[in-house]
Image 1 (tube, rainbow, N blue to C red):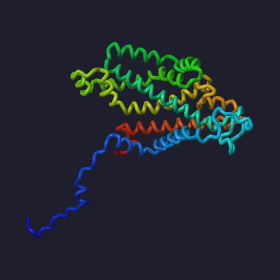
Image 2: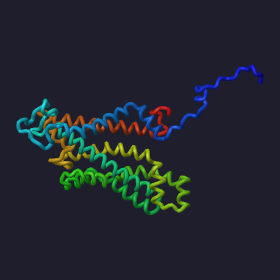
Image 3: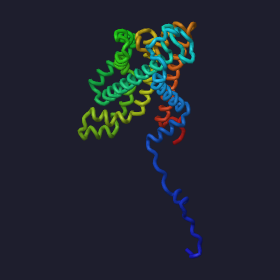
Image 4: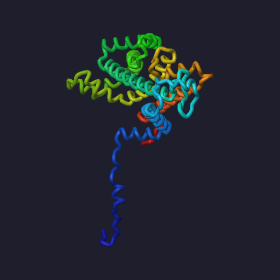
Length: 306
């Protein structure tokens, strides 16, 4: 090459173009796809605000949810009682805050419990197969044809309105349907090469289930958890509305809606405020679940290209 030929300029910009892009991690990819779903982001913001309200509002309320104000009986929303009062003098603002807090605690605990039990039982049934799989599926199919809401109502009626006992009953009765779905997904995993390799290396069966199979259906478990929160809220609301759930002096959104439905014409604020909180909670979690499904599903085009 002649000495006087022009050499291409090599600068920091050219060097930057030649450098390979940093590989995005799996969770960064999921996060980016989720953020592109505006309804899902809006749902997450609404859910975060509801959680903040449930935690902070009881501290800001002038009255406790049990305390009675005999000078303001059945009053509409005003400067002293922001959401009005009941006919007995309870502050509705404090009751809605505590009711939302209690419904969230029940929903999250039930969703966590059912997700864990269904994940372990469904995946173990798929891996061990044989008699264990047949017995497990027989139990699941039997529970699926039993009217579970009637069982919940029957056992919850003897709980004394304790939300902890109600949550435990909902977990024990509500794990079988997601376990059936997880078993179906896990059937293909037990034939994967890494499962066969772990078995040939002498890894115990439950260790294979917990460390090799469950992480590969993590996206399904996340979606089941978010949808489980919505289902648990609706079931608890139905039980409390019918009088089988949380009872006085404790409150939940379902019990508040149930008592407010009797006075919807004379004191509509007793119904509309807890109903609005329940609607925002269920809609926000449904939007988050929809966004997580699109973000975790590689075949979905809703999250856009990475």
